[in-house]
Image (cartoon, one colour):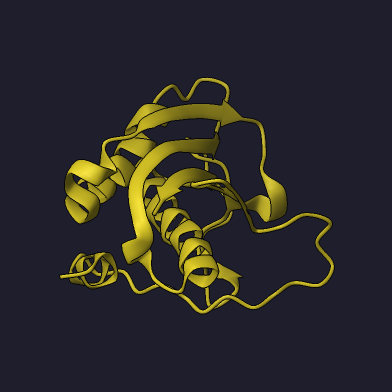
Amino acid sequence: MGYEERLENEGYKLPEQVKQSKRLFEGGVRTGNLIFVSGNAAKVDGILKYQGIVGDTIAIEEAQDAAKIAFVNCLATVRNMMGSLDGIKKIVNIKGYVASTADFIEQPEVMDAVSALVNEVFGEAGKHSRVSMGTASLPGGTPVEVEIVVEVK
């Protein structure tokens, strides 16, 4: 079973991505066998599923869902660049930015939802390094933004 099928078995379908002409940067850049994917928000059909600040208007469970959706959107960039997720050799690094209140300290728990999904879908190839950090706000009001680095064949 391929990675995309495994992802669907976990309840996530890769979205089709539309090239955005106004961006001054790429959604993903390949150098050698690495793809660096720019930050993605929790958008479903181009619309943010959640808006707000974790610890205020966003519950930790909503933030975890937002983080997984953002991660899946990162994978869509990889698929669009490679034609398939099956070219992924390793999930190298995941960075999670959590818009949160000053006293919210559970950013790692928000990103644990992504790590669990990665480990389930990618198995040994999903063993990754990670950063979870809090920030005052994120673009468009998204509560979570995720970026990834993957090694490809």
